[in-house]
Image (cartoon, rainbow, N blue to C red; front, side, top):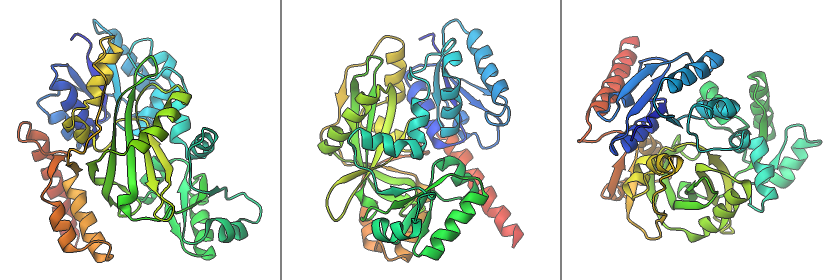
Length: 394
């Protein structure tokens, strides 16, 4: 196929998985980064070329022009694949101008930003009949009294912009177990310039986290989908997936499919739910509008989402497919899963025997692949460099 695939961000395993999903189908893949540091995804044998572009945030206009200039020089319009929320933000903001030269799944400017911004997401979801956790704004009158009466302690203090918050505080949110802790969390967040919300924590261990992953074609039909259950996250309880299994939950389709169709969404997206351990209801936690952590698992169960999108945008859609059986395959990000296991056991949330039993399951690793070992070797080298640097500082 003559249309190249431009993959934004090869310094994380999401970009690597997209490169592998497309390159293994014979597609010319182009890794675009702002630096060569840590870009282990570009070491894949499935990566055809790597480009160094202006920084997407520090030089946004130059970055967009760089992409457009590259696309104009090609025989056919490339397909654009963002692999980080920051890249999605740039594409969503400049969607109309980028669509002049690229094939992009989304058709409506602003829709992805509304789903990424939790201040907009929760009212939107509630208006479409999807349960969301009880949420209060810090500007609410009598906030402390309302939290005590409606939200209860401990409560979550969550940012509207999770990726930016994570880059500053190295966590997804603050947990407040008292009015004093809530006041402190809101003060620290405000000083850092973040818009926050106070939210009820849905009861249940991490295995109550579930996702609905789907592709909506250019006609707005949900053509490919599957559901998943998380088992371990890092940081534990409020982190990213490090050990997640495919498991069929038809009720997630019943909630997620109408939500996306009413929105008029196009392309791949994922809704993350938490099942309330007390009432059994599923609550929407967040929506991911780009390829997610366990893309290798999606590919392993027969849903090569990047290739599905690529073919759809070229007007050659693949046959619809839904995974409606349990295949007993899990995604694992080995490095952070080890850290998570340590913390779960230390906190008394998992036992060693529970962890041991989980090791004997067919896996879709995040990075390592014997058929494409170079990224794994580079990633291992990066980890060792960090360990040695930490040792020298002692």
